[in-house]
Image (cartoon, rainbow, N blue to C red; front, top):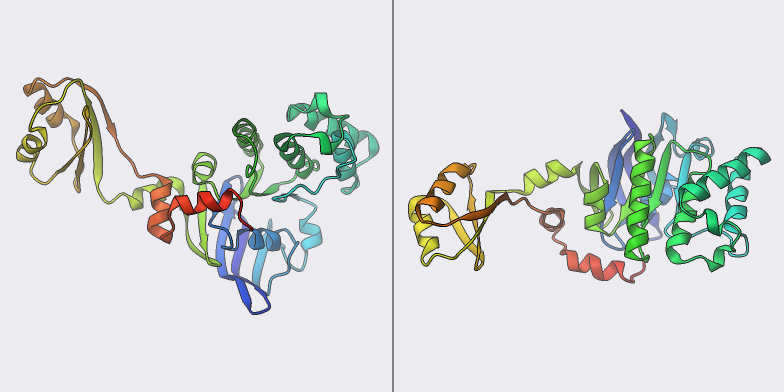
Length: 321
């Protein structure tokens, strides 16, 4: 069942159309990734979904509510984690969480208990009295996520959750997102990171130049990109003329040498391993490993959008959104 429905959504800033009539849905209980380069319209879309920007045209339905006309009601059951922290530098971690809880009219005892619970859950209990400005980037990000779920929202919107933080903190935040999702929270996240989307998301939407160009599950996107079946064999030794022997024994395949001890075989037809294992045995070649090679999400993104991953990498290191 869809918990978010977006239909023909557009946003103009003067003569610039930042989002161009996009449509997609998000299922209840899934992690949905919105992936694209800088300037593609990711942040503008998330701002419209959370009421921070008003659409020029189109419809938004969130958990059965009109996400434009009834945005105040919608904001009661969504959590928002912007790409840059919106917490107060002079307040402690605990004070920031208590203040955020008060915005949802939680009683004093309830909000203080919830703040302590989240500080412990996010590994920040020992720093709860420290001013927010003294936190590391990773700690700031975790506290900002904690503030976004202080009221236990049904849906959590995360804009670039791990950009600009160290590898260890990024890994911890990904685990926190998975844990929230396991407990029933629907997660909508924007990201530059191909590997992050592949690790976290059940489905992915690709947005380029304000247009959604593909929406599907990770597995289906990978399958549709794979135009041939590929198996990689790791051998104990190299045999002279192996490629030509393989081609002669198995017409219709292509053979590629990956290294001195690795060869990759591709075919438009399904590859059965047993005939190849028998071939290697007959030629006195011991196979240490045989594995199916699948396309990466990076290859899917390149095929669909024409944008190479190194471009996203450069942008995420320090471009304006």
